[in-house]
Length: 179
Image 1 (cartoon, one colour):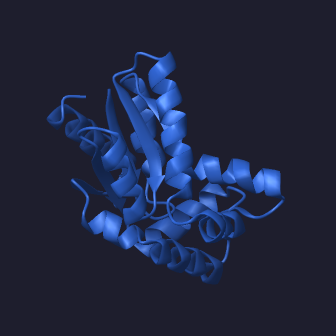
Image 2 (image 1 turned 120 degrees about the horizontal axis):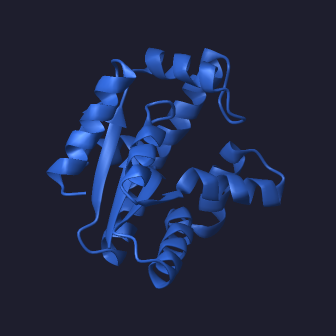
């Protein structure tokens, strides 16, 4: 089983990678969903929970919860690919590399103006509708080390054009790595 991570700042297009991976039979494990589940249990915002979990349990807590989930999938399912959506820190990458052979990271990049417009349209609960809130979220994510993850990725795809071109870039990469 290949385990692959996807990273990128909010609104860059990580979910499209997941959608195409699912078309190819992958199972998606979203680190953001894991944080959202914990936030709901705690009665906190996702931002508070993302920070508080790391303060309480260390930088590797979200990756530990993710690894636990993937190992359960490995026991129960015969899929060829598990895609981890939303890697935020080098600590997480290190943990995945320690636990999964041939772990690879794909990062998606889009400039802040484009990402902010996308988040306004998406309008998910944790998406800020004002630029100041959006910027603060980016700063928080960068504080986790996401910039290092992106810069050290096995592959970076730029997502600043039309959706069809972007989806073709993703499919092309999956072909390159035989997925």
